[in-house]
Length: 221
Image 1 (cartoon, rainbow, N blue to C red):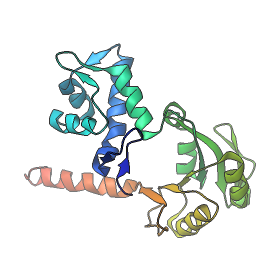
Image 2 (tube, one colour):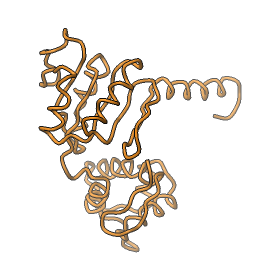
Image 3 (cartoon, rainbow, N blue to C red):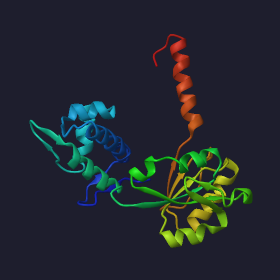
Image 4 (cartoon, rainbow, N blue to C red):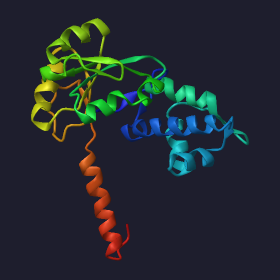
């Protein structure tokens, strides 16, 4: 992925900042749910798990939304960040690979509340076709092109075994999907203009194991 431009001005927002914006949005949502209407940069940084200088720098790319001596209006800043990252609109999503992980993703309620709508669940296994998961019938992977065209889908989620992931990605790209979230333990090759985000749970666990081993050996985590 490359750095992106703000929708309202020509500022380039660094990728590291883009990656933190959803974290700030989640923190602001938590503050709002607790009835907090204004917060300081220190409060928001603490809720997001970053230092306040980094937070202020990140938000400076979006504009000036804080008031000296008062802080940030939680609801307003939450809306501005949501608008910047595009989750004030409804994004149709398809999930391919309806095994245990795919079913868990389909049942994840956070998609809808964050601006994403699962429009189809696809699997290559005929035995899965017609099964209903999270209120959505599982369809054949061969239906992908029609589903993408009918629903204007730009985002696809891959939850297949590693051996099938590249073929699925190739098919997604061929039918017009330009953003892919990959849960398969494999590296995907895609053409320029297609964004891929990889989520590898085993790698995250191995990183935690590394830190646990250092703690056990008396080293710093």
